[in-house]
Length: 134
Length: 500
Image (tube, each protein chain N blue to C red):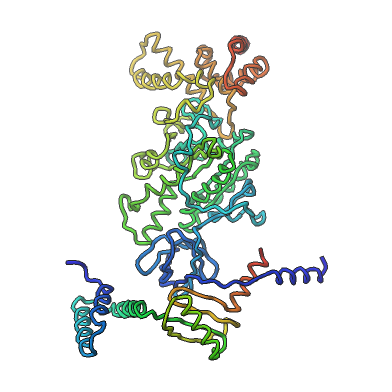
């Protein structure tokens, strides 16, 4: 028998639940959790959720972004950033998580998955430093 | 410079500066220990790609796993902590190379460590590069004159060859390498000395020695010291060969010495085990052969169409108690085109350099010798082999026939003549004169203990009385018919005065 792989289970669960009614989905999720328990892999549920989220995002063209800025974003900025992310990542939905970070000094830092767009003042100053030292 | 001009210059520089924002791949340090970090994220990273940590340290991605990357940290890892951001650079590890490196001491990342200011390279070369292909190569046919009689006569090294120097500790392995570098003055050969896991005091001594001998005018030293991390020891030889490749690409001949590859293998073993790669024989990882073969394969001699130039490699291996059949020695022996085997017993018998002529070979052989040397040294190896065999037998009896006695006498004189003190390389024309006298039997009636004296005297005498012979050997690589008579006469004349 092939080795039990939590990622494969997440893939399978996604395929199985797609387009099913809420009740059926409940049943499937229950079965999947039981299976995880049987294989003694309950400690890996975080990994399972992460994988499931990833598949869901891929299939639904959703981009999850973490945006940090010095001050709170204005409506207009939020709108521009959303457009930027949707354009770069060919996403239809953008889920944004905002945070404030004093140390950035200004500008924004956008992280989508493991891609980083660093337009903060802090990084620009660092670049200037490197340029001048050269 | 006045204050205002400085401010003006700064203003101008700042005016020219343009900040750029681009998409970067980032990861997060999950765990870090012993110079190795496990990083999540970094989804599009390449093998051996350079990454930078939050405080500016560099690392190399060696293990690409499903959702994490194993990174070896080049340099100080004490400031890196869990949760730190790691950025991919999109570049394979590269080092500055160029003419500016000559005379300098650099570390494994190509940065100067000799306190003589920053080093500015003419180009950046990747440390890992695929070796020159078969079409661009040419067979080895030019000698590297090591200045060591035993090597130049019996185990000749050619430009583009890979010759292993192997032996126990304290048998003079580094001495051979240093003498070879010292002898390259005016030979149009750039030398790169890669020191891997050596004591800093040893390196300092060596550098001073080379500087005193004027050898730093054509030598680069790459050093990964014993106090630095294993990752730097692992990278250092590749950095050295990248520096050498730059000169080869300019059509020049280069000699590179790796001192030593046993420590390199140990450093790689350490990294591999930390990265949790499965251990194999002697706990070395499975790809330890490839580690050295891809390095040594970069030594080559390129043909004219490919721009010429060559890299000659002299890797050094330290054996334990003379065991050349251990894992790493056998690997490197099979990769190289021959080996110079040094022995403790010979060393303590006073035969220095302690080359065991029987076990040492050069697979490129006499095609890497000048014609004159081929002529005089042709029979020497056989003479010595016969001598060793008879020497063992002759210890049992005293009644020996005439021919055996003769072989023994000749052998004793040959062994005596091949002795040579450290830091005193002999130029090829002097070697030819001495070997001519030996192999043509002129030394047979000189007492063994006087051979050294005879040799030095003869060279001095011949350089005055057989000048043409020596200059012909030096320039054309062979003497002409007429000059042979002159050298015979010179030797005979000298012997008469010497034996008086």
